[in-house]
Image (tube, rainbow, N blue to C red; front, side, top):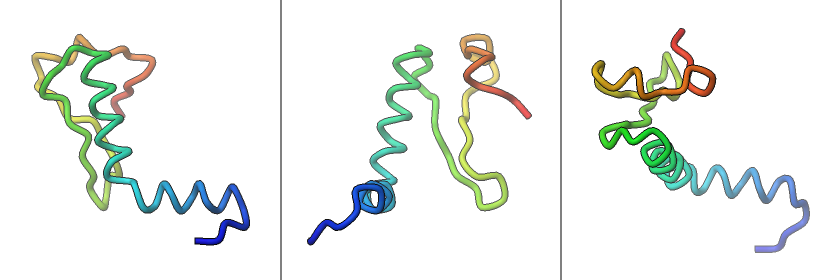
Length: 68
């Protein structure tokens, strides 16, 4: 592939590797919070969100994870 524009290339990389990027972010959040069952999910109406058990909610940093 011929590369013409670095910004466009980075956008294409995000598009092509989005599942792996989300999986990596999920692993990072699991390590950071200590919540092994933390999941990043996607819904068409909500977008991306973090799912955890209700008993683990106090382990989340309120500044980083917001509940709307």
